[in-house]
Length: 337
Image 1 (cartoon, rainbow, N blue to C red):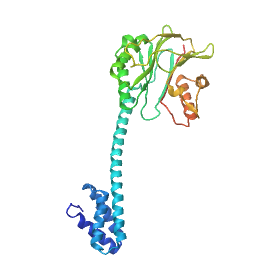
Image 2: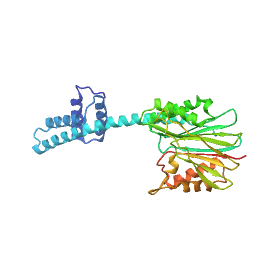
Image 3: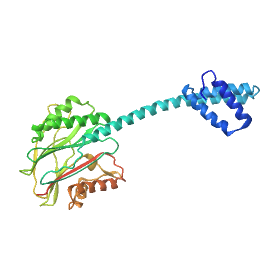
Image 4: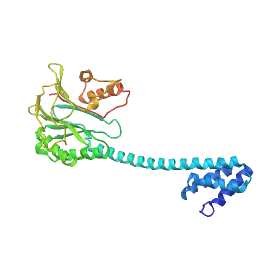
């Protein structure tokens, strides 16, 4: 049955009288349908209570004063409830819009990340990148050149949501548009720094480490922009060293310069690049020491690079009760011939 503004009161009175006379469950179903129709008329809860009271006054004009007063009490309560409910619905709508925006940004991020395994002759490369939530501030990208070398970047974008995804997009296309800079990490970071500084809001900035592996000389040349130090594993010494590169984070100053560092890789040596989701893993109230991270890597040193990073991720996840507190990205690049 369709209800109009003119017959709402009449219809409600008929339904109420029918229920009071019969107590029928069928009438209860009918009033449920009736209240659904009230939504089309944007009838508020307090208006329905007022309507109910008005009809009760007609049916029972001699109700005791305290019963009549209880309707006044209920009406006031429903007015407060109605306002709170409407505010809740507005906030719920905004939350749904935000979640939809986050879903779009998360999908955008996934399209920006490499989807194929990295294959370079003479190298074994493993990558794991896991967001703590839907959105991730971590990003990595690689470029293969005509000489068989690989340029590899890992970054942490301080910022979330769609702006972070757009920043990732900007970084990716800026890197892809500068092929002549791929062999020169310091120049690449200087170019990216200018792009970020000119196009990203002051509340956002980007840390990055970028390195180029020369497959002819077996040298890994790298520069850093305020990024978490990685590791260099020396197979002959069976030891880890910090892979530190000093440099200002991207986007702070357009005049920033970046120093280059070089590591020569022998067979079995490998480079570890990571984000602070690895090194700032909490066990209880304490952070893992870098030595403990190195030990985790060493546990699986007999495995492939991909199995190594997956092993470390699983162990770190287990230590945190399978709940990541920060985005985690770990890359291992090992010379195997």
